[in-house]
Length: 122
Image (cartoon, rainbow, N blue to C red; front, side, top):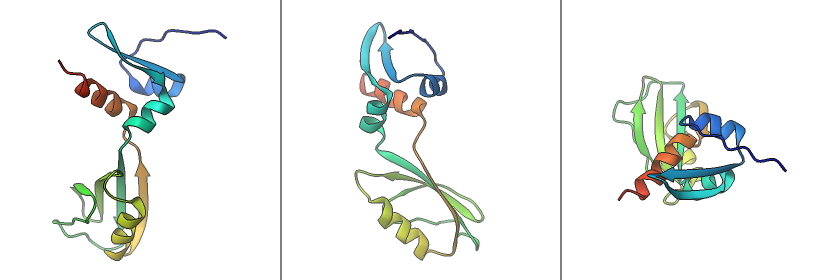
């Protein structure tokens, strides 16, 4: 059992190298737990990127998700999993046209840590 204290402003480094994370704000520890628990607690949104075989309407929207970006053949959505079920939103997306590709991802650890700092503003 050897411990190493790694300080970094690059959350990608932390995510790749560490099992535990301590978040310090103005000298105060505001979070101390496993990276996996951090994600479970704070990852309440999913990023959903969809590509269609046909062009997408510029005003594209789907119930249960916030439209972040609309491209010629695709959309990028923000899905709050506390409010909408992933399968229900995917069904609505499939009903909107012929799907070519779907990617569902979590926000980066950097975004999660930014949210923690936001909760602890004084």
